[in-house]
Amino acid sequence: MGSISFFESVVQNFEKAAKITGHPRGLLDQIRACNSVYHMKFPVKIKGEFRVIEAWRVQHSHHRTPTKGGIRYDNMVNEDEVMALASLMTYKCALVDVPFGGAKGGIKINPKEYTEEQLERITRRYAAELVKKNMLGPGLDVPAPDYGTGAREMSWIVDTYMALHPDSVDGYGCVTGKPVSQHGINGRTEATGLGVFYGVKEACSFEEDMKELGLTAGIEGK
Image (cartoon, rainbow, N blue to C red):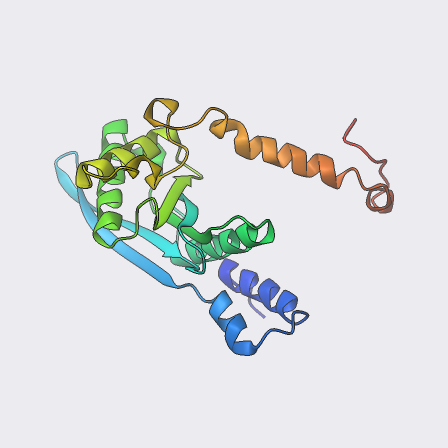
């Protein structure tokens, strides 16, 4: 039996959990399905020649809006991965009652192979394509940094959005993870790592679980 894809793995785990909920099959199918999958290809001029860039934005669930999820830059990005990560964003938000649907985006490039000016052109074109399809905006879909992206890329996206929506009163809310100079917030860069720390600290606090692993409770010495 061959290995299953990332998205298939997410679906399998969803189905395991779904069995004990007692919810109707139709509702479960609705929750599981990705609502919007936008696969785009656009040309960008690199060193005098056009290069076709492949990218995605997936909105998994519109049960609450805006949808929320990062944008990653990696040459291994594919539709299955973006769908899986968008699905997980929905479930993560739902588990802690954050009022967003899940989304995810990706551009299939190795950012190390491009100059800053080239990355800016790719990022701005991607943002413009999302705006065209009404898939970017404060009340619609709000991206964030992910693997291969950061505050710099978010600043390009918000600037592109504001250029296309000059009268928007809340346009700076079209992305999170912006530089503080563009209405971002202090601590955003460290937030993910800090969350991992608190998660590990909490997991290690359960004495019975640690005992089963042959460890003592607490994070000291681990």
